[in-house]
Amino acid sequence: MGKTHQTPAKRAGKNPVAYRDERWTLPSDSMVVRRYKSRNHFKTLVEDEKLYFGAARKYHEEDFDDTEGQATDATRDAEEDGTALTTFAPAEYLEELRRNSIGRFFLNCWKLGTDENQQHWDEFGEIAIETTIGRLREAISYENQLYMGMVRYVDDLVEIPSVPEAAYFYKLLEYASENEFRVVVDRDPQLVYQPSKEPPDWDYDDSLSVSVDVGQLITRVIVRPSADDNLIQFVRDTLAEKGMDVPVKRSRLDWDKDPAPCRMVYGNQNMRLIAKHWDKLLQREISRTSMVWDGVDLVEVVPPGQETENFAHYEIHRFNDSDIPDPADYGHDYLNYSVAVRRFDEDGLQNEWKRGTAFS
Image (cartoon, rainbow, N blue to C red):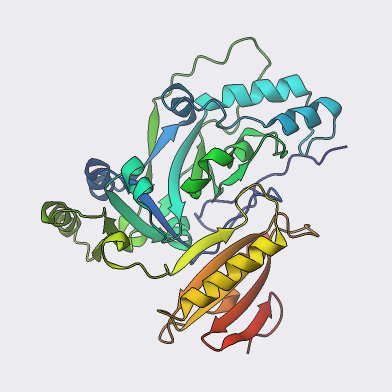
């Protein structure tokens, strides 16, 4: 039999929850995320202190991506033979549940890490709001059910959980360059579907706005490559009107080709770890670090109950001697992640740390 549907992990206070699926993980609080948008979106966010969430159905209707929130072929096959990860209803009911969910779920999207590329700027906006996952968790406020986590990129041969709230954290491999982090709102968490031939006649708007403390949220603002002085002044004026003293920087593509401070390096694509590939990535990250930074932490995060590394994700956190991270801050205790940290400087491996052991 498949595993039963798990409920979200509750966290003290107002912070949103991460869905407790063993293959859906939340990066460390210190991981940087950015939201790329137009100047109008930026101004609205700062002035109104609201984050925009787009309806999942818009992704289907306007972006022509009918796979959002749906199942892979492997998932449907597992549901048919009763071995699915979340077997709690007949296969036809689960298919109907996912199909109807596009009018109920709303998505807010960010990019993980501080790496930049021209394609992302061209596709998603001229201004990037920068924050960390920890700040985002603290700043956002919503009364109903809200989830957050990194997006996993898979092909149709990989089974994903059947339920919609989990399915919105998986996308096809063709979108992997987006390296996305998502916050997802369930507008009707108590709604129980009845199988029908047609989806409900949803009367929701195409978007909703969620309150956010912009002073807590925004750590920096980045403007697109080759931005003119007018755009930079627009950003500064918008922040000043709100009484915010936030650094405004040009894109790294204009001035700095050196390694970015933090990034996701592996684990969100297809959930198939290849040891040789991972070792090659590690060596590259270590060798690039010594040019600019004093040290680098290579962080492995494994969800609870996983005996293999197939569902792990890996983070790079570079630092200088004036701001050395505490390795105990990586991962999330309340989600029971297994965390291992390897710390390097220009002389090589300096120390290793695992949750529950000392790091000298």
